[in-house]
Amino acid sequence: MKLSIAIAVLMLVFAAHTEAQEAEKTIEEHFATFGNQMKELTDDLTVKTKDLVEKIGGQRVRHQNKELVH
Image (cartoon, rainbow, N blue to C red; front, side, top):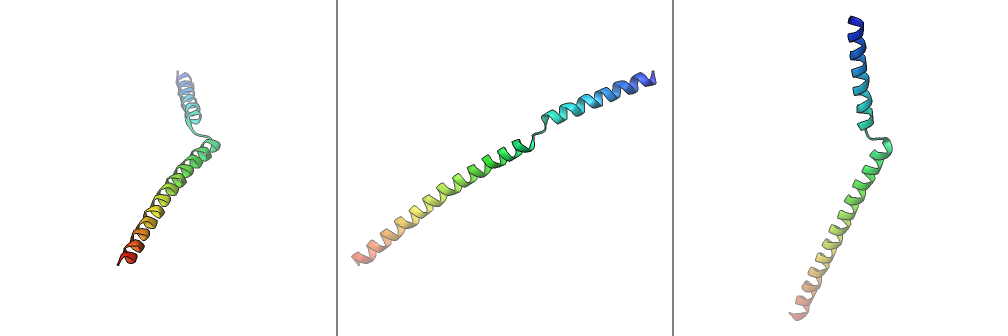
């Protein structure tokens, strides 16, 4: 009886371990996810930087125009 319980427990542990390994991401999947996150970050930073440069450039033009009027 003890042997059959021990075998059953080992089978359950093995099944749980196998399922856990299948759920884990591979290195390639981790790198793909990381690459996608970096692309999103750089795209977002590019847009924000472009908007800021345009905003600063517009303020300089208005400031220069005010100096010309005075």
